[in-house]
Image (cartoon, rainbow, N blue to C red; front, side, top):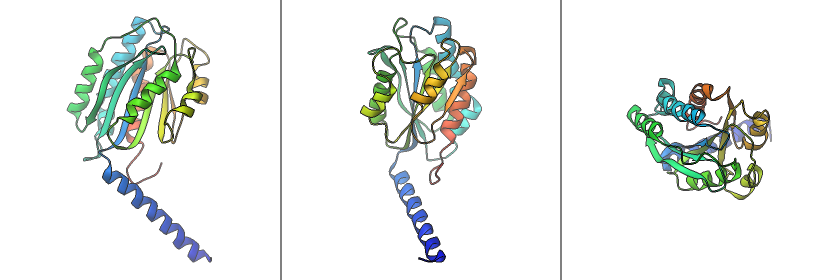
Length: 234
């Protein structure tokens, strides 16, 4: 095949891929299903939990985050939030909620701000948190992309870890990003980079202590909500 033939073949393949993506977008109810998981393990004290919980609530209504979430009219995002710690300690704070306006983000923010911590004395069972999140994603609205945003200040120390979770739960087409909170465990950043980050376009955001959680979450949400545009590959 000559150069012109190769060029035509590449153009045809690109057009076919774009048509496939646009067809998927037409069938989807939203462009992104985003799950946010908050660490409430025993290493997180009451003050730190408040910084994390209220930091997320404020980050969700930051102008740049709202703009990212609502930037594509007719192509909303869906958000769910849970908290996690030990093997059986995962609780839903917000079930799947479609975001089409700033008012939707304000309602989500108010729900998180009013939420109360369910547990305070359990270890860090990250594999179980990933299993719980996979169930949430399985019953998400049909969206073009699926992302889990997992926050944590320590490494897995109870039950199976992320590697086994990724082998046994349906994470083939899910992006898992991490929001790492430093200060309690020196190994946490490396652990999240090597063990937690997963899937296409995955990344790690670092908060320098829980006082920095809101800033880091705000930056992370802007990137997650605005990084993928329907019809374009990253």
